[in-house]
Amino acid sequence: MANNDIKHYKSKVTPYVFACWILAAFGGLMFGYDIGISDGSGGVTAMDDFLIKFFPNVHERKLHASENNYCKYDDQMLQLFTSSLYIAALIASFFASRACTLLGRRPTILMASTFFIGGACLCGAAEAKWMLIVGRILFGIGVGFGNEAVPLFLTEIAPVQHRGAVNILFQLFVTIGIFIANLINYGTSMIHPYGWRISLGLAAVPGCVLLVGSLIITETPSSLVERGKEDEGRKALKKIRGVDEVDAEFQQIVAACEQGRQVKKPFKKLFKRSGIPALFVANIIQVFQQLTGINAIMFYAPVLFQTLGFKSDASLLSSVITGLVNVGATFVSIYLVDKVGRRKLLLQASVQMFISQVAIGAILLTHLSATGTLHKGLAALVVILVCTFVMSFAWSWGPMGWLIPSEIFPIETRTAGFAFAVSTNMIFTFIIAQAFLSMMCHMRAYIFFFFSAWILVMGLFVVFLLPETKGIPIELIEERVWKQHPVWKKFYDDDEGKRDEMA
Picture (tube, one colour):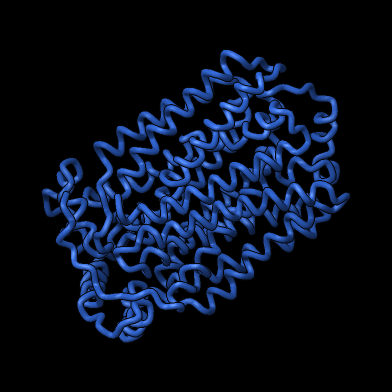
């Protein structure tokens, strides 16, 4: 599908628009920090002071549990505590979709930061389990609103030639948030008895930055025009493009919004024949992102470093090494995504991840028993394989899980469709978080083969079903992408979609 005839509209990156990108991307740091502080193998749920206060029975079992390389963190109550946030985020994403449509991206980002700050304050000050639970729910609502609004905001505000890189700032800040949270957890785990309060309370910091940022950033032109504010939309477009010559791009936005206004029920339109391609691709990408096995890899890394003889520093060293690889490789994605495209990054990474997963599984299956240790040479090899897996994930399925769903829907179903993508991400994050530790315990090394089989399926999906969106304005995605794809164009062969829209 050639797209070299696509016209790039005039634009320049001004200090203001760059600030808009960075400030909005703090929604990703907010999400990443929450992932880091609630990580089952090194977050607050692994801190003795936290367990003694809220889960004393779990702490008692932990003291008397036998060490098992595959089962040491298997506890349903803690898994449920960790995973509950994702259920709240799942539900919140649909309310966030309506807020994005009716109020705009900017107010939705403001609401996300407010909920998240409330969650941080309540969790950090928790004296009873109900406070902790309500705080987690507020965290979840903040994540649901932020993950809905921020990727859409970044996609809509970015020039077409830089859209991939700008959107991936969200995932970059997710990785930075995880890295920072891991370092903070390591430090606060040695502060007794309130170190866990510091970890949870500091979540308010990225929330506050996003709150201030939401007052500084502009609303997206697409959102303004969609809500009938065309003059404000034109001014916003001039502001984010840094040039006065925006007529051609503005007219394209207006035309897309006028077509979109004919659709009165966007959620219903998603399930019509012409809505299926984008809905399927957006959701299956989120499913695949969780089925890469990134959780298995990141969880097992500290065990490998213990095997290498780092003992109590294994968790810190694992966090530093995998965290730096994760952040660094995301910069690779930012650099390459608008040059080589989305498909090539995903295909290359699928091959690299498959080889890494199979090799790790084979080594652990043949050389690591439930209570034994790996030879240091083999452990070092597995650490290298872990890093090759993490880096390939970080420049592919990690960022593409947010980028592609945010750019493949037409304006009339964009917020509704992306809400489904966010909720699917939360559902499968919940399922994997809830089931993973038990799967690890029962499947042992075979879990790596389980995920590698899914990576093979993901590669085939990219080859046959994923269209390239590099360099195509989001207002033209339907015409230039879906209606040109050899498989998906069949869903546009009749006029059913137009009849339903006009009804």
